[in-house]
Length: 277
Length: 292
Image 1 (cartoon, one colour):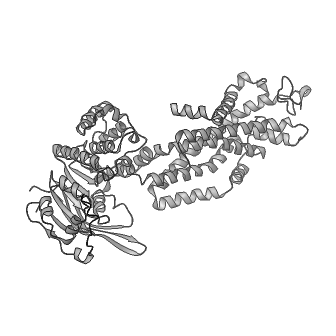
Image 2 (cartoon, rainbow over the protein chains, first blue to last red):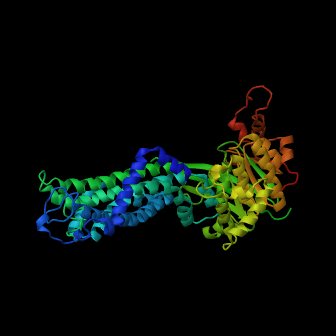
Image 3 (tube, rainbow over the protein chains, first blue to last red):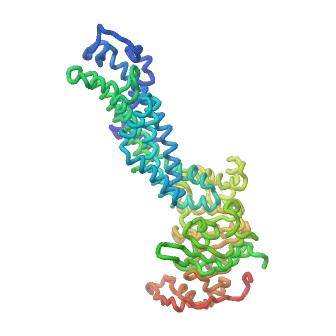
């Protein structure tokens, strides 16, 4: 713990990452209390004040129907973080289990599982998600599913590689020798040794999930209006560039802040946990 | 002599590879009586460790291994009983110590938790408090001064010698009837090795455990064991009481092995004749004592 604080304290980028993520988290959690116009998350129309550049009290300007951009960005963070959390909560257990089984059991199990993940990894992620969303209804739930389907193979590959190295370690042989079951060895002996790497990857991925979800809704395949979403806000504003620049720039910056913050946080974790992949 | 605790009869093992079959063991037979300490000595690649792994059933699970022969443990044939039954014996009645103590312990758990796992093999419902008192007593027997501190330590926080003692305690805590020690402490320096072997010897004597001691280090084997099997290229070439073999090695390979030990005399590394043909001479048995 002391070492962790020392690493964070000595590295300005870690501090920056932690502050950015704190801002993102706080604005998402406390949006109801700190957003200047909480009602603007939904269908509010204010034609007296539409498409205005940044001014007081709309510090980031207003959109095409007069809603406050700052408030909408705060609520959009909620959706993005929720999506990231759900996707990782589904993808990580699946991917990790597949990776552990492939790495530890070896043989044909490994061939089947890892070749299956290779199939998933060989399809460009955005194309896979787009085709899933194209077949299904473009809703938040389906968006989460689509991103989950393309996300778990990365964890399989990561965990499989660690497991392949760990299963040769003495403690695994020692556990086999005292008659421990395969399940016990996979989940109780090897898995804890994978945690640092998994945790680091999860933090990094949170940013990328937000990015890919934004890309999907930029293409109109993600969260549907009127629910605020960073990707669709950028898409909407892109038609009015460069005159109404604030429509695109502020949601874009919001994406950047979240992704950048999670990346820095991931790097910090990597340093603290000593995992260099 | 009473019935043997471990009896291996004509154990043959070969591995099937792309280039055909490679024979590894050509009919190993050995016996260990209750409370007896038996050494299995040979050079690298002679088949010592593979024999131990076959006893533990680690080889049988490899798809490429072809194995035949009987491995009788206390009246049960380990080669033919179902794997679940065999797993039940491992860790409770048979246990093993490895060469490198530090890597044999899982780096992410405290020593206490790992002891708890081992004790649960015999008593599934054992509490952590009970574990602690049991472990404290056995750790003090292997001369670990502050057992409480060690229980809360992670393996990498302890020295190699400490870890080795922890491993010995862990292997013996369930009062197994047979301990297989595969080059214990070869990864440690000589003084630490000597000290831990003394402790191990005291402990197995006290607990009446039989030991199969696998090593290439003749000095250690001489101190630790009562009887020796010398193994060369998958065959037992000489067997007999430790003292008898050291006094009068009969097989050419045993003689060469003994001559190969460097002495602290500045006479340089000894020249050893290496004559595979001579070493294939038939097995020499010292008849005095031993299991018959």
